[in-house]
Amino acid sequence: MSHSPYSWLSNSLETLHRANWYRSPQTLEGLPGAIASLSGQPVLNFASNNYLGLAGDRRLIEAAKEALEQYGTGSTGSRLTSGHRSLHRELERSIAQLKQTEDALVFSSGYLANLGAIAALMGPRDLILSDEYNHSSLKNGAILSKATVITYGHNNVQELTEKLREYRSQYRRSLIISDSIFSMDGDLCRLPQLLEVAQTYDSMLLIDEAHATGVFGSTGAGLVQHFQLHKPELIQVGTLSKAIGSLGGYVAGSALLIDYLRNRAPSWIYTTGLSPADTAAAQTAIAIIQTEPQHREQLWQNINDFQALLTRHCPQIVPIASESPIISLPLETPQQALDLSAYLKTQGIFAPAIRPPTVPTSRIRISLMATHQREHLESLVDGIKHYLDRMSGQ
Image (tube, rainbow, N blue to C red; front, side, top):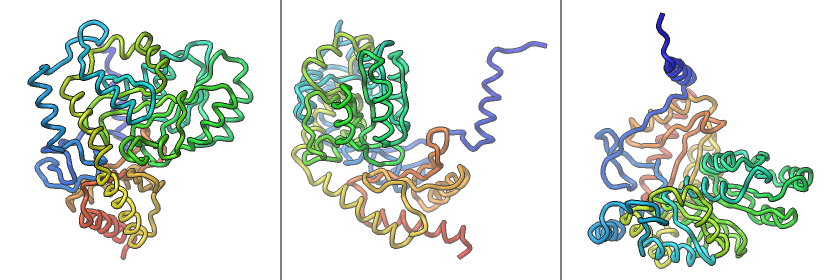
């Protein structure tokens, strides 16, 4: 009887199906925005991290087109060998100016930025403290570094402090890593307290601002600005693919840090530079974020309006958090999450079900954008209310 070394794959997939954990992508068409086409059906889009609506802004599109004409489609090589363009350095200066740091370094994705920064900074003799709800890129960067990794309870600063008190003296260097806005719950990290603990225990602090950049702060710089924490030593990582509406990632911090990462971060050194079109689009978006606060103001108006509508019409379902554009509605089982998402789709609403193992609790994850209209929010709440009423027999 022949045996294939790949036969375990089908068994593993079957297990995912039985647990209602199986996932597959859904095809969206047209420009990204509040209304999209899903499998040929117009839907209200509540599944996008395009928080300010800039991914479909004509100015970003024109900037990308101009860069394509001038520089071509790709950077063609790593930036240390053959792929460095003046656009890359201009974007890094703009990020540093937005973040009020000495310098910044652009990576080809936010995931690569976390992998490269953590792996470059830490090694086998070092200690990493990681929030249990951190993004996969933070967790895998810690694994790649070969440092000892200790996970602390979500946003549990007391537990973090106790771990550092017990273990810090046994290691050469220490690094605390945390999302600033957690991508699945939408809650904020306790950044002032994290910074205080880091200073007390001689630890570096790396914050992933992926979901905060463009959304929080007086000029959209993120949670660090929101809490008014100008600390040059703080390491800020982020993405250009959410509120900034392009692609790529960055690390922002001291000039010394950035110079070090240029020479030691493997996911920057050994990969092709960000494409000219993506670079130019991100540069344009950052200028818009800093000069047109109305996009951010409208986003926060939508967040407040949606929260009020949900409280008024669906008091039986309480979001996991209500502090950001990410609003997740918890459900008891993966099937319930799938059912609600499917029902909303019949009502012309795209709001995805998020299930284990991505998250510990099944939920509908709603992402609000500045380009959503009041009637869009009302339609979403109506859809949720009708489904809940039907389930309760009303």
